[in-house]
Amino acid sequence: MHGINKVLIAGNLTQEPEIRYTPKGSAVCTLDIALNSTYKKKDGTLKENVVYVQVVVWGKLAETIKLNLSKGSPLMVDGRLYTEFWKDKNGKEYSKLKIVANNLNFLPEKNI
Image 1 (cartoon, rainbow, N blue to C red):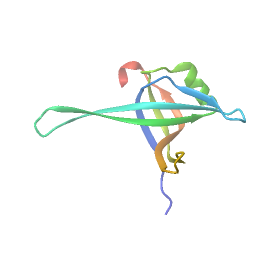
Image 2 (image 1 turned 120 degrees about the vertical axis):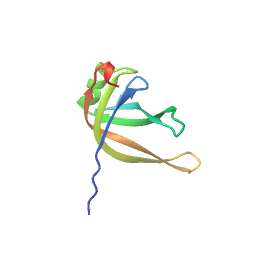
Image 3 (image 1 turned 30 degrees about the vertical axis):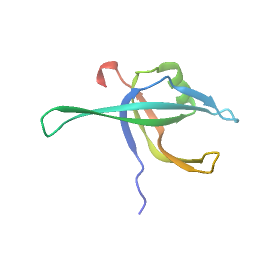
């Protein structure tokens, strides 16, 4: 059976969008997004939970983001999960789960 790899998140940028270009000229933008949620603990107090997610955006959409978004901007991301693997200079292996964006929606400030 084939799996479904679909992610939909809404949050706020934690820093300015970072754009760079591949040697072949493709734009790629890296976004760090905070996803805030609140839940009630057993004692009745509210607890806030924040999850930080890194999103990668390619092509013209990456350039549009750099022009229109800044730290704190709310947005919705529709994409897929992928894992990036690398080794440090000592050969230790690392991995990081990221989202590759297929589509983005800019949100009004008051929604998030």
